[in-house]
Image 1 (cartoon, rainbow over the protein chains, first blue to last red):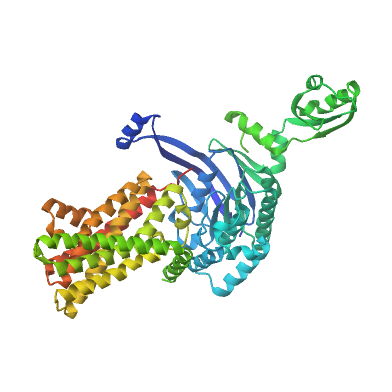
Image 2 (cartoon, helix red, strand yellow):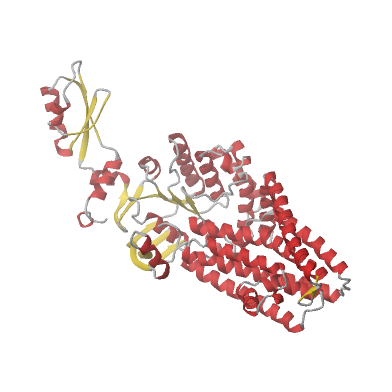
Length: 334
Length: 258
């Protein structure tokens, strides 16, 4: 019974994008004759997601994350390769399949702008053919979990971005999908709203055993939710495994935070010990290679008038940045 | 069906929020009424009949022009404009991922309630026109009129759908819709009064003839069985072509961004 929920094998997706030179003349020419260029958005990726898993999908803009999500949800036809979700072929968009999945895009709205979310929810109820009692129950749970309360009776246009996103998510989950594709669900939200949505995703996953594939630019999202991450870069998977393994593998640096004593120290002097990445409130942060961290700390304490020094792992962002800065071949896939 | 009914309800709720729109629409309907009637008055200052159509009959044509225009403006056009907007912004994704027929869904999503005012005006004009013309309308003629009105509606809908579907390839085509609008204005007169090339365009390129002239012909005893059958055939054809366009377009659609 542990057959994977999502199965992708050797997926390739190529776009034909119109291309034209800048300028009016070229624009006019392109009206008649459109040049297109082939862009490989996804280049031979394979992975599986098990039931109940939350998988973080990381990569810089244009890495192929959204393309993969769209292919999985059935919006795009794969150029080649095998894609299966819940044993369906997504691109056929069979109704039985569509009833069991949902796609949330942080940058796009699906709620009707001018009416309260509650009315949009009713529409979704009719579209998905959700029985009245089940609908009431799910809605009540969602309202509670997301703390929607009075929000759903206000016109959507009057809601703040965070409130709107919460309503979007509720609307996308009324039919209790088994697979959730969340494309940057927390983009542009403040920290509180982000945390709320994060907690909600975790709770929904625990309660319904739904599988979640999540993309986000905020590492906090990924750290809080995903044990497993898949890193995609230039349309290829360059890492697939535990989040902790990702940090170990790619973090080659440590940060050292230095607090000088009463007399200030010139930054130039500290810069001799490592790369200064920030300097605020008299506190200086240095980046040094991991294997030298201890030695540098000792030297700092003996050679400079310093009251306090602490060593930390740099944020995962740095690890990720490190990965994306590395040429493809240098990073072996798992 | 439940979905359609609910969309109607939601759209109506939506419209009721904006009362200003109501007054703007009153003004707009009034203006177009004045323009249409003014045109009639000017023409019949000079002549008794226009290509066999009396002034009363032409009033009936204006009536149907208002009815059909109101129906298109309230039922067809808003959803199609929303469709094009969705294609441009990539929000059509959500509609595609709903477990109902996407064409149906995008065709009923939005209505403009106040445009139905034109339908009311149209009915009044039609009744006045027919009474003045002293037309005795048989049940059969009335039936033919309704059938032709529905056929015209489906033709215009399919036409719009095809235009909107072109957005799948060209993304921005608002201008094409302007073309439709101005061509539709020509439907204020029976298409038979126009020169042949324009008649041809208004019949087959932009199906104004079938939307307005043919239904009126049904009421004024001008409808031949041939054009009746032709209208039905064209309805089926247009609807099928629309569906095919739609299916191909959806396949070509790949969202506004990667």
